[in-house]
Structure formats: structure tokens, C-alpha cells
Length: 139
Image 1 (cartoon, rainbow, N blue to C red):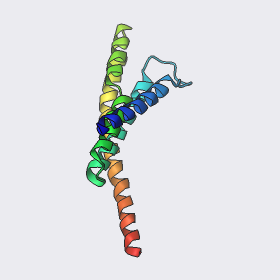
Image 2: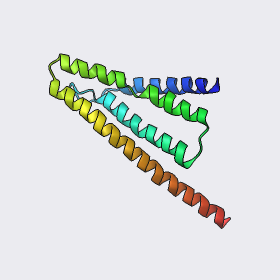
Image 3: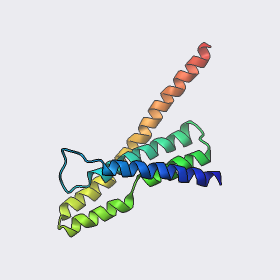
Image 4: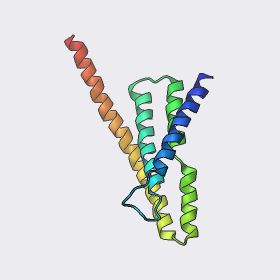
């Protein structure tokens, strides 16, 4: 039961954050490209990779906490369905090239952000663990 509460809590926080970012207007951008959703999904790919690498390879997170963060927060924060809807909207406006670019950038950069999230987590957390071990030896 606790895991469902944590997933729901994480989901509520992720959905609120997504809504906040989605409704934040970028003053210098006035085009048709759905930049807010792209930023949300790319940052979500990065965050999910960091969380999963941290939980699975570095520290052993409690399974319920990992589910609350990964499934709840990141799952509600990112939005594949909105990306699909926005792609259809672009296509309905005959902006086929822009729709193609949106999907391509979302997938390719999503994978890159996930890769760099995993890489970053491994580097940063391994350094933190190394410093912790050195501190323990010095004590």
C-alpha cells in the first residue's frame, strides 16, 4: 500500500511541475514548435536515468521510494501522449517537416539525455563515494 501512496505523491508533484513548466512562456520564442514539452521530456529522460543509475548501481534505494520517484514523479512529469498530440496538431497545420523534426529531436535527444544522465550519475556518485571512503580512512 505504501508504494501506491508514494507513486501517487510523486505523480502529483510531477504533474504539477509539468503543468507549471508547460504554462511558463518563453518570451523570446513565438514559433509553432512545442518547446515546453520537448524540454520536459528531455529533462525527464535525464532525471530518470540519474534516478535509476543511482538506485540500481550506486545506492540501494528502497523499492517503494524508487517507484515513487521513477514511476510516480518522472512518469507524471514526462508526457509521451502530449508529444503525440502536438505532432498531430503540427501535421494538421501542414507543418510536416516541423512535425518530423519534433519527433526526431524528441527521440534522438531523449536517448542522448538519458545516456548523459546515466553517465553523469555514475561519475558524480562514484566521486562522492570515493570522497566518503577517503573520509572514513582519515577518521
